[in-house]
Image 1 (tube, helix red, strand yellow):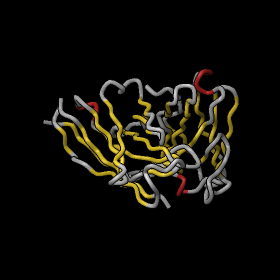
Image 2 (tube, rainbow over the protein chains, first blue to last red):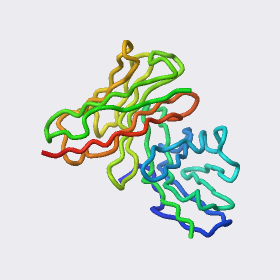
Image 3 (spheres, rainbow over the protein chains, first blue to last red):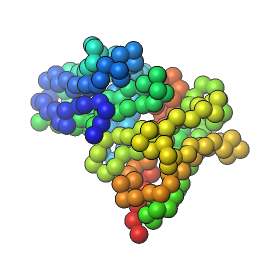
Image 4 (cartoon, chains in turn brown, green):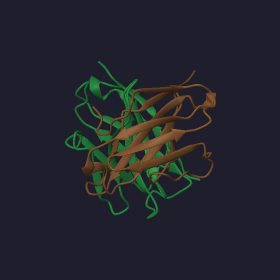
Length: 110
Length: 118
């Protein structure tokens, strides 16, 4: 059982906007940043969002992150077939110098 | 551009020690600008953080694995390693090495599948 809670799956049609939630305890989520990773089948995860809502170079602005209280969200707008993948949230707990992950969410494009 | 590559046995017997190495290219293992980590993913499941090793030598482990895990660095080979003792079938997973430079785990290795079986 993961420390961060994500829905196991989310689906949408092309062009739609979908959101993935990531819930954690106040001790984990408070004062710590949330990171999001995308993982295609058979490949390593890749950083998608850092520090709650920042995109690394090369990540399209269709992807956006937010955080409020004990929850964070990843939104994908203008859904495309290539967005079909697993998405993982993570928090670096600076007080414990550790990292926790969510269980991952499979995004399906219908 | 940093590049990481895992290597090690793909099959380990129960109760034995799992050993993996991560070769680093495009950067120095003893750079103050990075720290190094291991993450694993059981088949069909989510990611689990194993531990991090910092430039200072400080190492932090997942509390659930702490008693069995060691992460070390070999500066001569420019690589870092993972040892996991007393493995069971529950330790069967894809093991990833990753680095944190600007952001958390911003570079990953391709992963190495390790199966625990007799």
